Image (cartoon, rainbow, N blue to C red; front, side, top):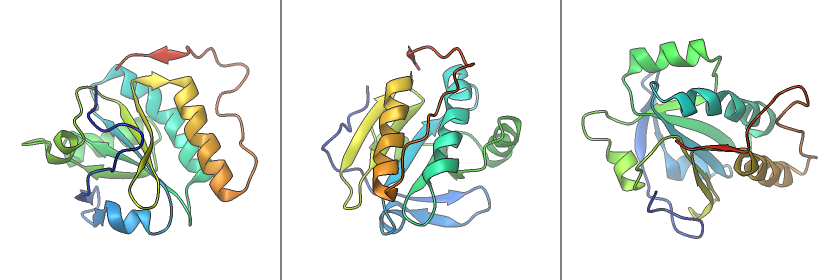
Length: 165
């Protein structure tokens, strides 16, 4: 379980991306909501979930929302993982020596995904893969962009309702 639930304030952070640029939650929230997915490259449920989150990023991130991942692995391994799973969304790195940000969010499993509203309040907090959770996040972001939500899952895909992390 995470200790950060919907309605609570998300802990602030400063993290570096794969290219070494520093990002802060506060700065990202200035342009709109932020979706954060914590992951580990060796996690099979992360491998399953993140390509669907990439669909969310492709459709709804941009000038008024950010979809990003926070890796619990090193730069080289994370870059390889992103390439293997065709992930192009912003990826930040939590230091694997102490997992300071993961610990601040009270993580006990990955993937753990948060939708954080401007102002820092958590709107959605979910762990593992949840089809309904991703659809809720997509619906929230589509409403913010004032566009119709596009289906995240194709009719020809056999997707379980959930997978624990």
